[in-house]
Amino acid sequence: MLDVQTQRQIELFLFEEARLLDEGDFEGWLKLYEPHGIYWMPSRPGQTDPLNVASIVYEDHGILSIRVQRLLEERALVLTPMPRTTHMVSNIVAQTAGEAEFRVDAAFVCVVHQAEKQKIYSGRHSYELIRAGEAFRIKLKRVSLMNCDGVHTPMAIPL
Amino acid sequence: MTDHTAPELPTADDIRSLVRPDHVHRRAYADPAVFQLEQERIFSRLWIYVAHESQLKKTGDFVRTRLAGHEVLVTRGEDGKINVLKNRCPHRGARLCMADEGTSRLFSCPYHAWVFRPDGSLSSVPHRKSYPESFDLTDPRNHMQRIEKIETYRGFVFATLNENPESLVKHLGQMTEVIDNLVDRAPDGEIEMADSSFTLEYRGNWKLHMENAADIFHPSFVHSSSVMPARRAPANASILDQDQTREMLMANGFGYDEWEGIQLNGLAGGHTYMKNFYNRGVLSHQQEDPVIVRYRAALVAKLGEEKAAQVLGMNRFNNIIYPNMIINAQYQQMRIATPLAIDRTLVRIVCFRLKGAPDEMFHRSVRFLTTLGSPASMIFSDDVEMLERCQQGLAKDEGPWVDFSRGLDSDQRDQDGAVSGAASEMPMRVQFQAWVNYLTAEAA
Image (cartoon, rainbow over all chains, first blue to last red; front, side, top):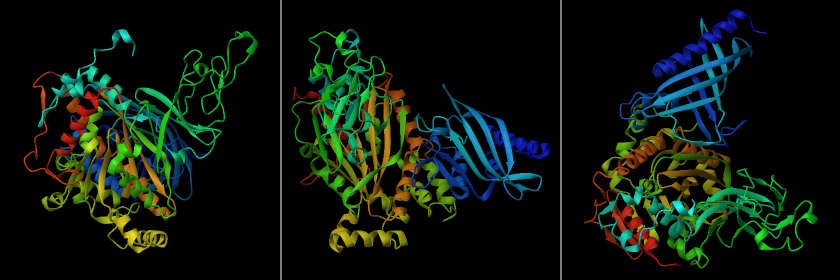
């Protein structure tokens, strides 16, 4: 069982991540990732293989940085008008996973509002975090979208 | 759709009046009566892709899909034959199967437990004695409705509601070459559909997607928000994909020289394709990276040097088989656009494994699928936005004509059909010529 203080620090780290996304500070959001950190959104429930099974997103820092730069491009059609989001993170449970490393599970809901449309995404996040001084860095964020294998419309803002 | 709400179908003259050599009337995209006629004359009469044989390996394997407004099950029967069945219990009309795919030796209706074999015949009903004496298990009226016309070309299964269709090979015409090319790229001579795919729905007419896939003029504009950051990003910053994603994003921002090198082709029947795309990076097959070297060796061992070079040399992008199928053989990709309504379309995007090729080749196909076809794609999401904006504009009667005149003066013909440079809207004109022909044809 993780001590209450570390659990709290991790919760605040996740809330900070949500705040950065909601405020459109995508460069700040990317800084939360390790240099080789990975953002993974599988396309199948329980998917374990990112190579032989297509993912909605399977990107490391190198590709994510292009994605983030695109979010800052004025010409991205899917971002006009810029969507507004509320990223909610809850049911956060953190465990130690080795020296200064943690596994974190959480539930999420994200409401995306754009022009006449409002969409709701939900599912579970699981993180592999590394302690970096007072803060943490993301080695892996897995977004298990509840309707990952369903019928989709375009997604622009990271969940 | 019930009869009392069915719109009056447009006449042949009406349809002809919608398409001029260089313009198309907005009703082609926005009139529900046109959609109804398309369902009857295009999606019910032409050969429509329904499944790939690799999904139907053994008895009871099935896929649930759509055919001209019907939900159908494509199944492998006890006799080894492929069946296409309407997914509806003949007893009370309930949908029978709710799974997208799977294996089932019997399909049982959950309501009153009529049980069907994979060929749609009725196997049993409970409490047989309460049905009248005239009730006959072998009566086809008590069976799942069959679609009789099914043909397969090299593993691709097509079906049609047309009782008297031309042969599939005739319909495909020269587009058989691209299916051949996709299959021939497998060193073991067989391909297998990946068990992951994406399905997207957009609020727009199906033709908008098929036009967009034949339109090489838009990427520089529509995709600049991903081209620019990809160009600025350092090479090989990703450890996941050998720069494949970055190269794919940059490929939409061609310079004039590369762009001029792309040739568009239009064939009778409405099929189109473009030549020479993705000539750089890990996707190009030009470079000597270890995966390509191993793959090429496996293919040469099977086909010989000359044939292998020929197979790998075919560089065609977005091969569009009319009405709704798009194949990219060299990246093992396929898309099917299914119209749901005049202003709603479902796009299913899949990829294939080349049997006998190195695993990494398949990983690249999977990466290709994600980069271009995922709902979070940095490319397709901008396309979809544009298709929806077109539909929003076309829904209103403000200037009824859509312009397709670009290239009209410079298009050429060769022995196979129309040929043009990248800037031309020739492919859309070819698609609409076929559209008029199909919609105005008398009963087949």
